[in-house]
Length: 330
Image (cartoon, rainbow, N blue to C red; front, side, top):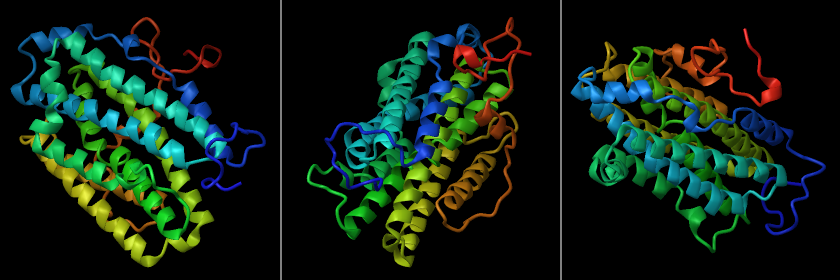
């Protein structure tokens, strides 16, 4: 049974499974379950009300909350209103339902952060209109994924499958795989300096979820390619590379705008280098050549994605959040 172009309304005949990787991603998502209220924000409130944060640091925090608060709704819309309709394989649909739940958790996280810190929601949730580099990223993704929102669109035929793959790459590789990562690096760099630890940990958990979303998305993209090899011709590959180059430029512009004078000894250029590094990794995942050939300037970011370190129970919550039967303690 192929991954697309089966009945969209039949009962969810999930057994026997065809794509075991989708089932694994679903189970991994369940094991990673978390909610924002589990993370203490008391120290963040104290820091936010104090003079310990510079104006640049406050601006950076607000910009990242502003970008992510609306970006998460874009990702949820893509899953619920478009991708689920066209990916007809049952086990993939089960994962998409799980991902939709995680996007709801991420949206709830920004509500929690705004409420806890006493931020003006109009300022935060309108930054996609008032901040040009945020607006440009959001508009770019909306334009990239508009075809699959057409109620008359179908994935029948080579050209339509190619359009669908184009939009999947726009959503999973560009939006979730590139546009989120300068912001992740900024917020976690602050956390490493013991500033806004609670917000940083919220972003850490979001990034872990997003790394799983990206893994599923790349497996989905590669499976569609494998089952429809005629769509992945040289011209289409060049088109995708050009889109990704544009996306990197947008993310670099955002990095300079959000952090113009650097952060805690890290220059804006270094955040841009990190974007180039993760972009090469995304390209490799979908069978395209690297563009930048750069070393990872933030090797500590992989620790934040893995979250493999348990913490002392009496100091803070465990970072390896698993279901109760799977918890392990030092």
